[in-house]
Length: 464
Image (cartoon, rainbow, N blue to C red; front, side, top):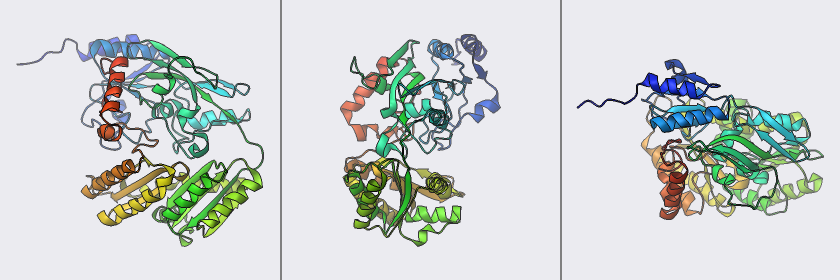
């Protein structure tokens, strides 16, 4: 028996355009394909979006959601499409709601130490503008030059400075959010302390667009520290010794702004990419940064590192040299991924378990004969093992899948998490119950049902 839709596609698109007068609505095949964003092959690659909509304001957001409710259409929030876990990929027949045009910095207040921005503001742009008044925005994901604050908030993005300043959640003071039913909530505000009501602000931070659409973010700014910042490199025999040294630095009373680890494979890849020779020095490299503390903090840091196996330490306060060191960390992924298919993972463990986790990653690589490049934010226990395989092999190899499973379960066994800062998306949502357990899994679904009873917001993401 044939099944007939009550509405034609043209009728739905007409309603969408009428409901979003300030938006750009794209329905042509080239535009829909361009914004499908399916780098991991996890999304609905065979299905086409109904429309890609660049909203111009909050009323457009409400308009998209009203059409979605009326016609029972999924809505996929997206801004700069930098998700590594298929968090904003196309869904067949869905409306992709992009906030890329909502990109105004509404306020930067040196006196209040806050900024108010729309979700499409690029992280680097906000930091650059804050610098002009002697302030800076702390969260610095590796995608800082291209990722937007809305996506950073939706995924609770981390970064290199998390060791000292925390992830995005720690810098978000307030939000405006449009719920699936069209209500707009104003949550939090400009004060650093807020104790009234439930903390709904941070319920939405990290919710990956499954509970509401973020339309405005109020974030904390910090004054640029006085004095000279210092960056440096320290070399170790292996990642285990490096991890032990980092744990001691964290406990020493020094508050580094950066403690980044790169294993021997990663350093060798960087040497090839950059034309450097760092791999000649050791089996692992630590990139460290101090933004305050002066000579005394540097002396303590160097002593701890030397006492725990550092072979060689080089530090500098020269601006050009510091930028070159930071570029090493930023170039890590292009160096590792060049010419390969790849998957980059994102586990985090308690600091006391960082060394055992590093040991286990090496064991898995040897046991399953996979090539793993391990790096990460050592200062907060966040490990990024990247597995690569030949470009011509389009299917993910079985031993790669097995390696991921083993590393995930080891991280959980050590009291950690399998998503430190990259979110859950569709790539990891099948692990929700294993990490969180039945009761938390159930509560998450109840919250989702309360705020999005029709299930139209970013389906198949975050929770399974």
